Length: 242
Image 1 (cartoon, helix red, strand yellow):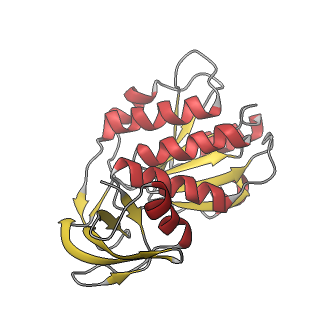
Image 2 (cartoon, rainbow, N blue to C red):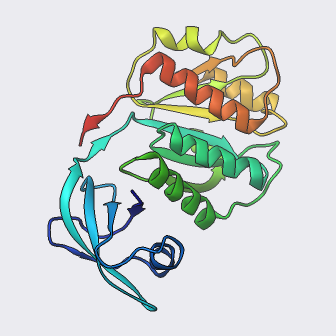
């Protein structure tokens, strides 16, 4: 069944008017008619079944019926990723959402090879990935900031898994197996790797866990997918009631 993320509060009997592009998708692309059903979620109220009650060239209206799933939260995991070129970055966003991250932070490092990101487009990719994978929330995409500034304001209670390509770090799974299962973040660098000074600072921070993803040099998108999968293998991909 088609799933849509909407901003509206969801409860039995509530009326929902999808955004114009969502209405076009439902009526013009998927050919839904009055009486057709869809699933709605908003990141707060769980997932609900809704029925098309009006459809015309200007849009459509839905009436919310019954809840299909209560709201649950995934692991408290963030992805911190250096800006890379558009294609790999969009892949990273899509796969990170599929793999359950709660938030995605973009950073600028000394070797970052891209200087901007279309946050609106990336957020749309995250929304579509959440709709397709059955998530009940959509991770927020946070605009880029300098890595040094991010680290200056870091809350130490959240561990940071630093994917260190310089060598010498323990294998990621071994490093994580005995680690605390509290809030975490995974840090992925740019295509050119971290500057030596950045790596030195990261290794010295008490909340950072340096890890190795193996002997091969990975593209940023491959590294992000591998790191998130390893973190889940060590920590679990659990769901808890909100």
